[in-house]
Image 1 (cartoon, chains in turn blue, yellow):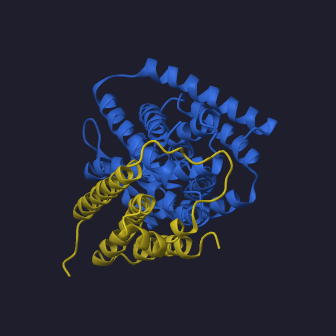
Image 2 (image 1 turned 120 degrees about the vertical axis):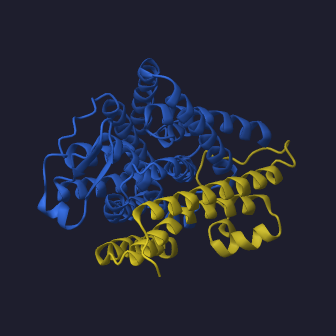
Length: 278
Length: 125
């Protein structure tokens, strides 16, 4: 295989990963790392380095639209980024300490959880009626354009949400992914934010979180241009196309199919990690 | 300075993010073009981790290489621009909150900024 074929194959699989990531809402990273490690036999450290780069690209690209629509809450995002960036520093440090077998196993578990989480129903937002003294004091509230009128919300369980975010940041730094599923867990389930606000704010935070581990990845030589170039461009193209498909059609059946792919990748990652093949 | 509304801050952030991502993608794409100039050479072996070239691991090394139009350095320069985009976004927030006289969030966004700077300059060492 020459570099043109190698680059083209990586570019193709990255488009697919970006598409899948956008349609399931899980982000491209969860697909690209197992694909590179399992299909291309790329060392997992190069894979998470390239994935992290693609995560920054897609998050920043998608945030352009959300921020403009006023769906992301910049204050809540900024506040929680204190937790995610600190977690990401820890995660990136752990990457340099843990063996690749362990990274693969943790990755597999996160994949299985993400597939499960993408199927749980959107929780009803109850925050509109409730107030919260701490959240109000530090301005973790806001409003967005609902179906009928402007809907107000106030964050709940702030310390718990902050703690889960630290965990999400650690996983992001350790695995080179956005860990959107864990971020949504913190904002939907713990902080009871409206679904629209939590998903878009989560996306808004992913780029900054990833940037916090990028320094470590770069200095340690995890980011190799030969892999990162096709992966970044491919995932970007795939996620842009995926976002368009999402706007135009309902994709429940596709989502089921993709979740099966993610579960299979998760099991294979755990198995390969246990067998010492990754 | 005139106070800035949340809406203006959001739109400034959106413009900056788009600019950063588009610029990074263009630079990476150009680097990719140089990289594939000799398409028939064999790719390096990525199955065992050996860390990429030391000159590609620091901003100074990347800049030096990119000025000589070294393919991998140009790609890496695009990636550095991409990494800088969220950092610039945090700086925008610091300035925005400053113009809103929002002391609490000046502190919050400064904290995030310091963590990012620490990681970019001290991370991994």
